[in-house]
Image (cartoon, rainbow, N blue to C red):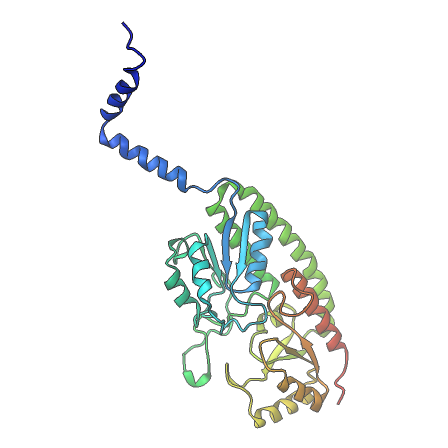
Length: 327
């Protein structure tokens, strides 16, 4: 005779109670996994230390990523104002992309310690150091504090060279795929599109600067050697005598002589350094100041990304190099 409706719920409770404890454990784990899994349409949260890294990440990730750069485009990446809000942001991200090569060593480690995010720990898929795989220049043979702020891994200002952008873009695509396999095809398609646009523009940029191959340019900090090598230029002179040390009157006099003797026609002026030294050199020699930055948004009209930034830089520099020294 079938059980009455009143007895059926009680029998179901008794049957469930008879399940082994191991079954309950499996169910709890499965429910926890389902609850913790983000919806398929959720964006990956990506933090980058600088705006150039953010630009490449957006190129590859597209709508599948939400990217935020910690440093402002006009900020010196060596000395970023590390706000407490950065710790909260880093605690929630799925991926961190940093320049590496000690570029952020003065401010990033403390933020990571406070964030305590295992997703972006070293050697995790969510942690990308951009210098890995790059042919680093100016690796010091010894570290001597009397030489200023040196970088043991080499000069960290490498991403302004398009060939290095390509290397980073591929690493970002691979990292994003490891975190979001469902969008792997989209990441590869966007990578191919970015590389195609970069290659096309590189031909244009090289054509602009080819007439000036071998010519010297001047910067304040030694941050343009990768750019110079990419386009056949030279940066044998910089305004600061050693990294982090401002020029003396004697240094400025030597630079005036060097500019005249080497017919140096352009000096890069970046937003995070004082203009007065470049202005003095321009007044004394006629060298042309070129507003420059290695970070999209660092100079007006370059907010859209690294390709637009290089478009502006190569165009402005070519125009400056076409003009002889005025004095």
